[in-house]
Each structure stands twice: as C-alpha cells, then as structure tokens.
Length: 283
Image 1 (cartoon, one colour):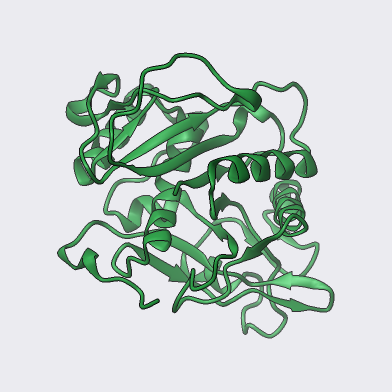
Image 2 (image 1 turned 90 degrees about the vertical axis):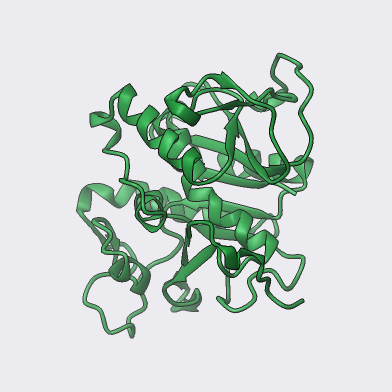
C-alpha cells in the first residue's frame, strides 16, 4: 500500500507538494499522461543518485517509488475541497496513512508550556500554535487555521489523528499523521533545504542526491521544493505502515479534545536505515 504525503499550502494550489510513496517491487509500465485531478497514470521512475535527478533507473526490490501529483487550479486552496480530493486519492489508491505538513491542533492549557504544543517545543519549531486562535508568529495564523480545517474536514470523512506512539496501526483505521520536513532532514542526518524563496536548483539536486545516497528512492519527475519536502516528510509514513520501529520517531503528546478543540498531537519523523530495521511492531 502507498502513503500519501502533503506539504500543505493555502494561497495557491500549485504550492501544494503532493507525493505518493510506496515500496516498488516491479518496474512500472511506461504510460504517459495524467488521470483525473492531476493524478499521473503509471509512471516511469528516475533516480537522483550521482547528482543526476533525471537519470533513469529500474527500481529494485525495496526501492521507495515516489509518484508526484500536481494541481494547477486557480485561486486559493479551499480546505474542504482539498480534503475531498485527498480522500478521493486515498480511496482509489488504497492509502491508509496520510501525512500532512501542518499543525493538527492547538496547545493544551495544561501542557506546562507558555506558547507551544509539546511536539513543537521538542523540535524547536519557529512557528507555534498556542491556545485556540493564537499563533506565533501572527503571520502564520491563516496557514495554521487552514491546516486545522483540513484535518477536521478529513476526520468528517472517516480519518483519525494518530493516537498512540506504541502501536500506531494496530487497527485498519485511516490515519492522519503530522510531518515536519525541516526536522525530518535533520533526523536523517541531511542538511535541511533552505526556505523555498532561497532555494536554488543546485540545492534541490544536492538534497535529493543526499537522500538517494541514504536510501533507494525513485521519482517519476524531478521534484520541486514542495514535492521534495513532501517526500522527506512522508518517509516515516512507510515505517508506520510497515510497523518498522527503527524507521520512525514519534514526538509529542497524543491528541485530545479540550473545551471543544483538538489539542496537542504527535509529529512523526523518519530515521535513517539501520540493520535493526527488520524489527516490527507486534500485531
């Protein structure tokens, strides 16, 4: 099964980074074109090894195949519309883990912190969600509120926030998992990408090459900044799906309802491959 990873945005649909990640065990059939809602059909994959992000490569068993999705709709992103599209993709592609790079909840009034969720403080996030309606910096509030709206809209469609760090997918529930690409790069031991505005093409090539040197990854097209952030943020989703205890780090406190609002919530990061990766959560 695949994992869908989204680098969220709210101003333009083209700013969304959307990638389907799955273990490739066979060579996909080359079939150009795109399906509905910008969903590519069966892609052919390329590798970023040796710094060449367009070089062709046949995936070996265990390769992480990344299918990049694109939307070119005009106007701002509507959270309800986005949730519907994401849910449709997940239903048609049998996705049970949806990774979202954006806050899922407000801070709990009893977490002992003045202005942050526990996960945000542990990862030293520059943007923080405080009590309901409070975001630092203030300029991040529209984005944070749009993210919360997306989570809530997906929950109305049968999704659930990740509730436990011990056995994340012991049930067949469809899980929403919060990612944080900047910390994901650090967790893998790779220099994080600069901000989108400051990133050069050479920065993308260097980061993608470093990622592919760490683990076997292929893509159906060279990823842009948002798409590469979605890739690195989504890697831990595969570990959760495979119950690989050595592949993911879960940070923060479980989500809970408090005074009519969702509070806290985990952020999950990928860990570099290790020989202990054969460990699995018990069913």
